[in-house]
Amino acid sequence: MSDANKLSSADVAKLLQDPNENNRAEAAAKVAGTFGASALTESERQIAEDIFRVMLRDAAVRVRQALSESLKDNPDVPHDVAASLAQDVDEVAMPVIEFSSVLTDKDLIDIVRTRGTDVQKVVAGRRDVSEDVADALADTGDEEVVATLVNNKGAKIKEATFGKVLDKFGDSDVVKAPLAMRGELPIGVAERLVTLVSEQLRDHIMTHHEISPSMASDLLLESREKATVSLLEGGQKSTTVQELVDQLFDNGRLTPTLMLRALCMGDTTFFEVALAKRVGIPVVNAYKLVHDKGDMGLRRLFEVAKMPEQFLPMARAALDVADEMLETGGDDRQLFRQLMIERVLTAVEDDVDTENLDYLIGKLQRHDDSSSDAA
Image 1 (cartoon, rainbow, N blue to C red):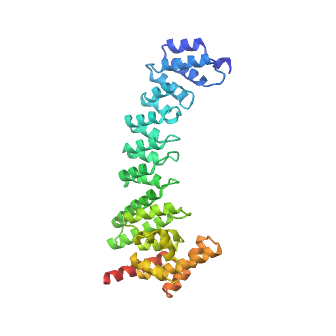
Image 2 (image 1 turned 180 degrees about the horizontal axis):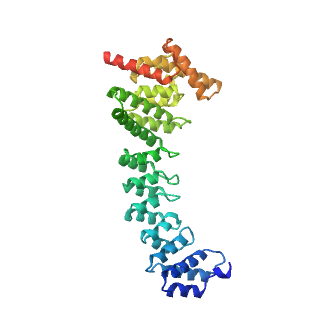
Image 3 (image 1 turned 60 degrees about the vertical axis):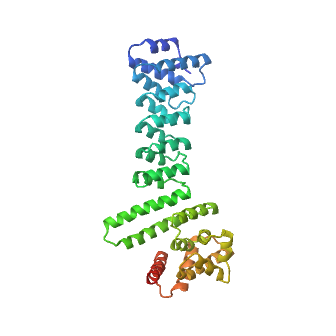
């Protein structure tokens, strides 16, 4: 370290005695700037820490702000100094609150509970936010704070905290948009988010287009089912699939068309777990019945699960393709879908001239709805 940067008694005297706050601020920055350097002796380090504590009591905000800016990302700052700066007025506190690794979760939670929105947003935007701090931020009930939190990729957020966020801000695009863009969401949270977005879509359709309520509901259901099935892309673990199925069932959203759509997209696991749930039997039993080559097992499952009879040949065709892909060792979903559509077109209606799976499922759904109405 150069002599110009070494601590000296002159620095201390200048800091403590100079009546000009700008000079004191410069001295504060100089002392803070040298702190943590390996060339400091233990004696010099102790002097610096004592000076920091003196500066914390300086009446001029400018001096305390200079100290905060200079120490904000220094991991060697004594905890009492960092905590005192964090409890100061906003312009002094914010640099330390945003960057300091010396502050503990307890410090940060206390800050969240006692400070205003601007400071809470700084906490929410820190490079790392623990689950406990995130939960405290969610408890603020402030839309801007929560939006900052869910937009922070470095924030660790528990599923229960996500639940709080959706309970409070299910109608807020400011919160839902960054939430939907997070790389990882618990499957139950993702499914719930899909539902909230779909309900907003329905409201938009009803207010911006001249369509009947029943048609709007059909569009809503199709949109929700597509998005829900997309949650299963990439090969979810069976435990996660079970969680999703349980949530869908508990909320009345485990519909036959959703199950068929998932199966036709190549997700036999979801189809099997969903059937087991609707029938009330272990998944292993449903698996055996689904793959019964005699076809009676699947038919019986459909009857008990109250699945539309018109869906049975379509499901069987999709399962046959899945079995073929398994035997050949293939895992190409695009090929699966192409083969499935070809088989279903043959199995269901030879005169359907389309490659659009949504059209086909929709056609069967409308056919089933009209049959129910007639009954």
